[in-house]
Length: 187
Image 1 (cartoon, helix red, strand yellow):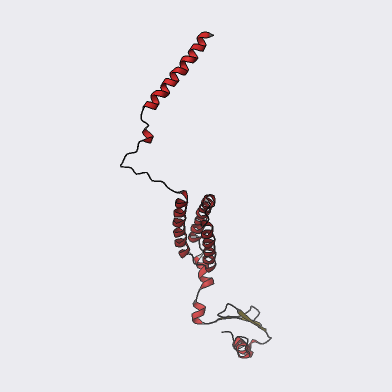
Image 2 (cartoon, rainbow, N blue to C red):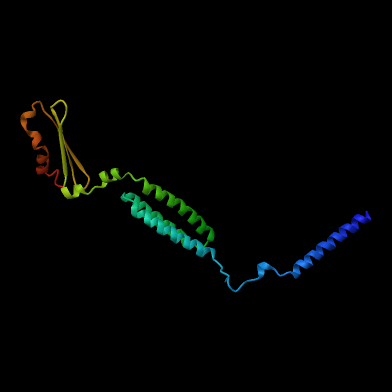
């Protein structure tokens, strides 16, 4: 047992000697060469710069949106995210940037998958240039007549009539009679 104790004592002596030799060696990590200046980064600065880059990307995506409601939603969202970015807490900035990355994915998807044909039908300005549009038709029984007039403000007037004899000619002036009475005075 005494021999084991001596061996453990020698091993601690050897480890102490190794540690002393290591202290005599120059520490490579502590040596700084004059060619590489030490640069320290503040995490808040990095997060703020990252946010500004995300903001530029979001504004570029926003310019590709066609639907006015999408543009309004995007503008409001950017305003709220900018308010959160003004926080002094690093954790808030980290979470804000993570959320903003997700928002950018949603914006990209929205920009790539816009139903442009549908938006053109909904938001075309042709009605504003040409004025109100009219559509009229006889129904299958040749006794019922319907007419539709779309106005500039998006309202529609529907005119419907039923008669036994379609040769009376009232169908030709149905919307005109309504216009004279003031029902169509919004155009």
